Structures are given as C-alpha cells and as structure tokens.
Image (tube, rainbow, N blue to C red; front, side, top):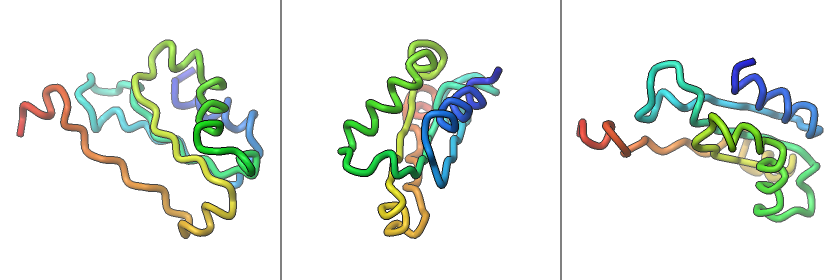
Length: 107
C-alpha cells in the first residue's frame, strides 16, 4: 500500500471527519521523483472540539507513528473543528516553498 493511501485510510477510520485531504507535497522538496516523504494533512472533525492544538497533533502523530518512524520525513497538520473550518471559509493555509537542499542551491 502506498504511504498516502495508508495515511488516508488510518485517518478515515480514526476520525469522524467532514473534510479530509492528504496531499503528497514531496515533489516540492529535494527528494527523488515519486517520493512519498512530505505530506500536508487537512482534517476537519468535531473529534477536536475542546482539544488544544498540541493535543490534536498528538492524536494524529500517535495514529501515524509507523509512517513517521519510517518513510514520512515531514507532516504538516491543519486540524480544525467544523466551526473553525467554517470560519476559514473552507480554506487551508498554503504550503511554503522548500528552500532546502538542492532547491536552495538552484536559486
């Protein structure tokens, strides 16, 4: 199973979400083609109600421990309750451009 698919499946099973998006952003970084090492997760769930940002992140990190111990190098988490998501008009933040490794040297 591909890393992205494994992440999506685990999130789907663990959270009662109204919106879930897992983006493989590896192509934006200094990694070989077709890598699955850098991901952006946007998850909207009322499972996060009453939980602070750190607690929300710990929930997801615990769930994705195997991926983080293995192939995943970076995981950007954007975790919202439905009310928070509505206040953002359903827009997650943009990802910054990578300036590390050979991408930095190319500029």
